[in-house]
Image (spheres, rainbow, N blue to C red):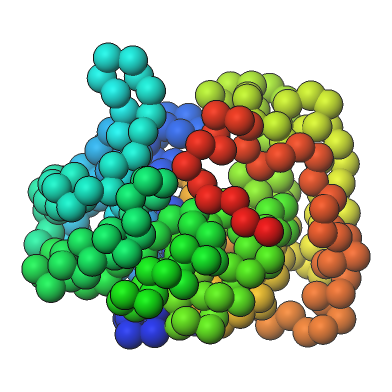
Length: 330
């Protein structure tokens, strides 16, 4: 497995990591045995970067990883996140980036994970009214306290990253980035490169659209997230399946799974880009990891761009409710 740095001062990690949201039921149920089998396969494939959050299954993902570490040893570089909250009375989602909340959340995550320190701690969503400079000072304090080796932000705009980096180096920014979601090309990819910040790309195979087994309408409707996501509702899903057939056809011509080609395209966008596909299926993980073995040339990249040009996707990547929290930029 090729490696890339997790930030300018960070450790080298596998070029392709693993997102652990899916083991907590986001796209369907997963047992502990299935999660452990997935982690075992990740290790066999050379994957050593594991990404989770305190809100994935309300701590279930972290608890499962903690049990795995207790059984197998601390074998992954760990990243976790905090900052998303739910009002217990109304169920409304809100964001808290206060020092008190982030510190308490990280302490709780460390307890669930069974470790004294994580490699990377993200603010999962920015609290809009709290200056990012203040939040960055809090995160720097958690580094000094030995609770995390580095920190990052999820779904922030390039301007916010520059403000944070003026206070302290930011190891990583996590953002949705793929052939289906090209917004990071409008400044985030470039700003991360200029600042020595890793761009950790989640949903790198377009929530399944960029694979050989994309979700049909029945599968999409069975997912609480996908059934209301603009790209997976009728008639957009049918149009998107037709559009992504071009990638599947190109991948087949090259003798590759579509997911491998999608991951290889991402890795070609810069040495600081690190995809973290999320899956419950060890075979699907192997297809994604195979993308790290590929070295695409200019002709390959041109053929991919021709198959899926910028703007091909039907529907926004989030609906109105799902857009609450991520920072928009242009």
